[in-house]
Image (cartoon, rainbow, N blue to C red):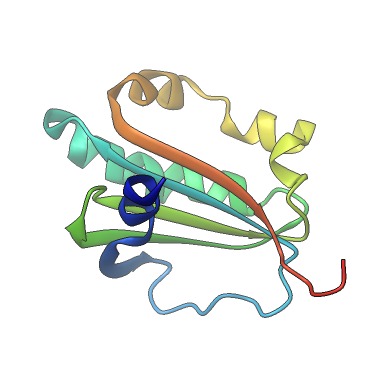
Length: 126
């Protein structure tokens, strides 16, 4: 377990999209996607993420904010954080539709070391 936590928690990087946007304070859920990409697809991956993927998912009802980071160190070079009204948002039909595209289908097989976590806001006394 410690090895998994260390790999998950060790990430240093810069926010690359959308600039210096701060996370919302009242998100009820968070989706974390962390991954590497096959080197020969990295330029196309970045174009896809910035021009298609983040804009499409940001428009889904319940998505408060989407931010993307490039790592300076750690096991995964790219991290995307989606701040959500609730952790159920990625299960919605709208989310699933926003993820579907030929470009997505072409690039997904090139993801390496992919880690996806859907988290719920912690509240004491629940």
